[in-house]
Length: 408
Image 1 (cartoon, rainbow, N blue to C red):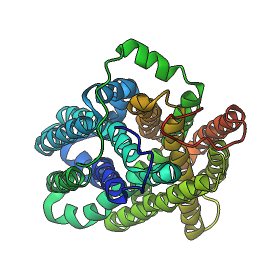
Image 2: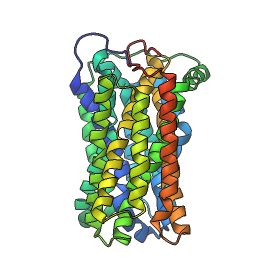
Image 3: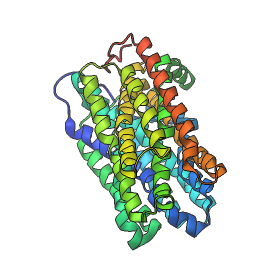
């Protein structure tokens, strides 16, 4: 997509691009509340259940840049369509799965679709926004993950008792098709960049040669490791350790996920006010380093511990907002944007891939004691904070805004 350089931002197009991201992210949020039913029906262990969640991120963790390159080559709008097609196929296959192996394969297909959508849609935002609105728009884009996950969880609390997890899988596909129709309608006027004819190896080398992109990608890895682990296993913790019902555990987890959304918006607003991205990374990570381990360690009454979880999710929202803005600012050119997003999302998916099964392994080895995960969560947050300080030094403490020429 050609960057929008003059005039007003096409906010309807921005909203629809965020909407397709939200619809894609529902395929992540649908799993945690359905996990008890899936494990019971398919006979999965706790660790197997972790892989059902994390295998979704396998392809993203290994091929995010490659899928971004594909999007740059065929055009970002086609990249979105390709991703939606894969999500539809994976959703249908998952709903029909009769074993854990088939469900894992379906989740891999969904993972291809999710990454394709999320590396391609930001280019639509770039094409729709005026330069002055770009940092804020990319901050808004970052709400797609928590919003989609929370919506899926709330719908699951209503749908699972009525239609089961297979019915939930199919019902969410209808919402995905609706989001695609709105996107197609509202972005049809956006200018389209000619397909990239650059040597793929050179394009990847130019993208991965940007130190700033490495900083944002690795910070996203450490963040996603923590956030996705808490999102996936909180329902199990609330039901097994605190004795809550499945519905109550699901709704409390959805609220936790939803708390990430205002953090994302706050991050975009602060960047619009010229707060450097690196400081957002460091500050968010410092709050996460204190809040989640204290909550898991059993400090204080349950209400206080849950408030710490909400603080963890809220503060963490500033990190993806800064990372997506950073991807746009540090990409070598607009034609590299999907590849740059792929690199940052590859870091995110690596964290999603490793987090749930590693935390499940640690807890299982500790005899089901969830407090055993506190040190691991704190170390991940400390790594993200250190990478934020690295970005501060790299950018000289200044805001670098995404612009038509994507300056550095």
